[in-house]
Length: 439
Image (cartoon, rainbow, N blue to C red; front, side, top):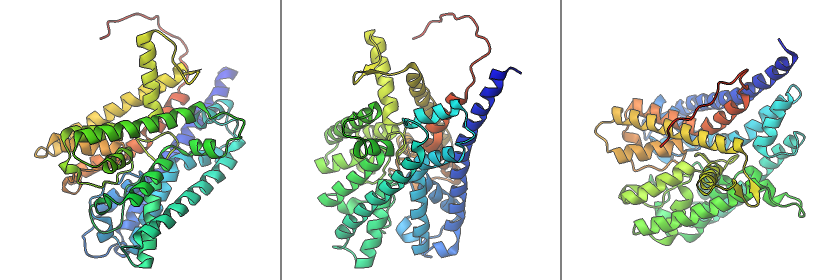
């Protein structure tokens, strides 16, 4: 074996170790949470909760999705709701913090190739930044959620007793910031009762957007030296977020007879948060399709949200524009690398293939349900959005397992694909190239 080959082996194995550790950690937390939520102490006794319901709830929390088979406020006790809150917090932090933590634990043994992978993934100047970023992420999360909880307490205080209002404020802040879309208000209708409550809508949207743009963007915006320009990643994320919110609001207002506040709220919430201030089953097919597009795109990399991510769609759009115009893949006076574009199309293709398989399985298992409802449910699960037209609890056991798989793949899929790309070894030889007819 050549010396060069020996040097490359630790790199590939280390990447597998980091990726595998994250996946196993998510699975471990998920199954531990399902067991805790299955215990009688977690139930109120008002609603029957099976182990499948507990597993589904744990998955929707860890994957910060929001789809539920039982009404959380009515089915789970104070202990159960506390477990749910911890699962949401762990799931929201997981994609970002567990990745950094895994890298820190493996830091000394990492090869240069693995180090370069982490630096590129997190846009870091060096691995010495990991510990500092880890602490700042935790501090920033606590600060945002504390402010959100206090404002939520003030809003809920007008409708509930003091301590109940405080608990609702804390839970809503954590759920909104982590883009989970789960509530414990016991109303069974998410935020319908707050549909025209401006402070509640604005607070929820602010928490969703803050959690959805990603920790690295927040750090770049608030902790960047004044003389240093924002990173290209930051500029793309902020631009895409603003465009998607604006375009989504206008399209939802055009397609359905809802207020501008409701249109703006669902434009924000659809991209992986899952709160709804109106009955989605009453929206037009055009409105539901707009929401499906927003759910599929999702939030941004390194955030608490899911979806294929805003930067993925942006990179694909830039690549297509460059191909059609015959110009470079440039944006914001920079040029996207070929590797970035390849990753974007691979993530998009893998997401579409997963969705096609998921929808097909749901159609086979639920022949009596409408295709549009099943399609919407599958997109919502894979995009970890959590919005539903009201069929989640009506699905059979096998269909619920399909939704669980879609939620898990949607939360970890793009990250796993990226790790697979990095760990891939270059071939020892190449065949000669030949053109085929396309399109």
